[in-house]
Image 1: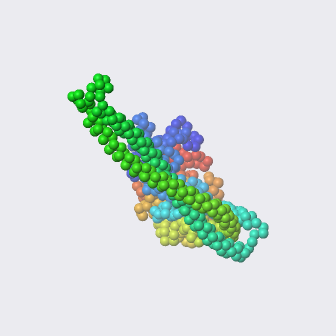
Image 2 (image 1 turned 30 degrees about the vertical axis):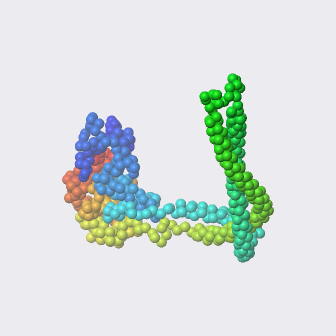
Image 3 (image 1 turned 45 degrees about the vertical axis):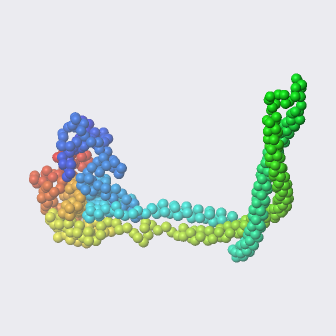
Length: 570
């Protein structure tokens, strides 16, 4: 709050409100500033139970707990947006934006400017669109913004410089003595033809190498197989030779048995070497039969082993022959592999040379293709450079946004202003029209700004009151509140109010009418529809007693009176 005499001794302020949805409530705030607290019900002192809800004083689109959103939600204007410039940038419709439609100080009420404009060029578009929102209920949320001209111009200049730099880099890459495109195209055709020939030759050589490599692999596999088989044959021969040695050992044993039997049988029939008696004199046979039997068995076994050994020796001979064949095959394949490897070794350098030449030609071809690509890229960049050199259009170019209210809406609003002026008995049967260019009214074709200060104040008041009544009749959002400073300035006494100067002729004519009484009589008729507060700087004796309660007095140079604060509280 401002440092005025009346606020001394107070550390806080309570404001009772009756809101459409919330009903009775009280706003509390420290006189020093800070956040608000909102309490249900009407209170003369801050409730001690701490039931208040914190309300921030500044609007924040991300946090709905602020005083602007609270009040606009009750009115029905929360979340509305208006376009604030020709680029379509949005401005949230807040209490600060709404305030010029509800309040007018002593400077604004006599200004030559429209009652709905503040004179700030930066906010003029938003103020015009705000009036349209109030009169139609339609905001600009659907408008899609475009980038501001300054941003687009800066971006275009940046793109222009970037494209110029890219063109310079291309020229540097091409070099000072870069060949012309026609020569590059001819060179590219020849290179492509030569590369096709090389590719065919390389494919043929590669096919031959692949065949020889495949044959080499088959020979190596055959050698490995022969070696494996020869190894297996060798192992088999070794095992069979070991078996032959077993056969020989068995034969030696059996021959010993046969020889022993022969010796024993040779002594049969001779006298006993111990006692000298004849063999016939003994009653036992001395084992002659068993010896014969053992000798016969040994002979049969020898025959069998000799037959098996003969078969074994024949098999060993066959295996040795097979082993010899495998050794010969291995020698033959090894020689063939050596010859084939020599051919491959001789062919590989040739094939590598062809590939190297092919790669060299490919590199030259790629360089030519790159230069042609740079030429094409330079052409595209040159076209873009010419586009960027064109002037950046303001706003949306030909697709300009419509600001302010249209003709039919302005006409309906002017009719409502005319009804208000007729209710005040404004002289000379005023015919009111709306000037879209200046967003202001005209009286009988005369601009409001062309009148004296007092007449401008009356017409300013009529415009804002007409807006209030228009919104109520159309069911459009409006808080139903007006606070005006010196709307009846034309009834001033120049001697008491020297700052406003002498009365103009139109002010003198208006002062001679009964407009003042009709003005207050009309305000009284609006009781219950709107809350109107009028500040006066002129002498209060000019008013009749029944109108005193509708005025808040302050003398020249004084601040807001305590009666004003009390009136707002009531």
